[in-house]
Length: 184
Image (cartoon, rainbow, N blue to C red; front, top):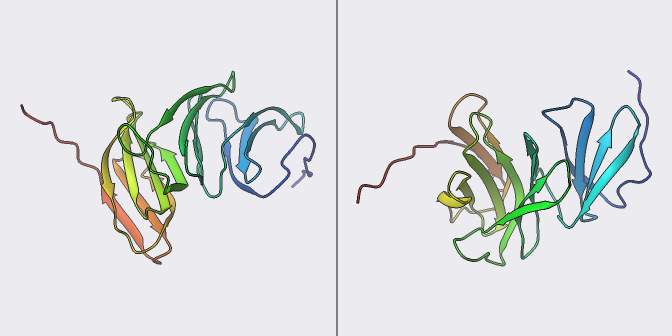
């Protein structure tokens, strides 16, 4: 193996998450406690851009196509979507329809791997995991709440509508997503 330590410009505090770009194997995004996402090119061994804002304290960074998803452990703007190329904010995602509860501190989030229609995220403080519908303004359509402890990790199945989550309770939970149409 070869490699080295990349420092400047770079993070000033702990790094909790990093992802390779699915469109270019030479590009990486990292995020952590310094409220900054850094965009790295492995060919240059340095960052080529950044986004200031997200306070990432767990595995709450993901990339789908040219969209970056961040989950922040803070009392507002917990879930956000960013454009990879311009590094501009696309939108925020409210934890509840119409508002963001201050206690929804996000430790983990991820895009669906199977399709382009869902996001899963887990919190501490509220101790819940929630699914958001990307095809319907990112509105939450399912949640598991009243968990005994926080949710620290989430992961979608690679080829199915299954996701798993785990956290402070020491258990791994596996959930099958079933969408039903409402008949009016």
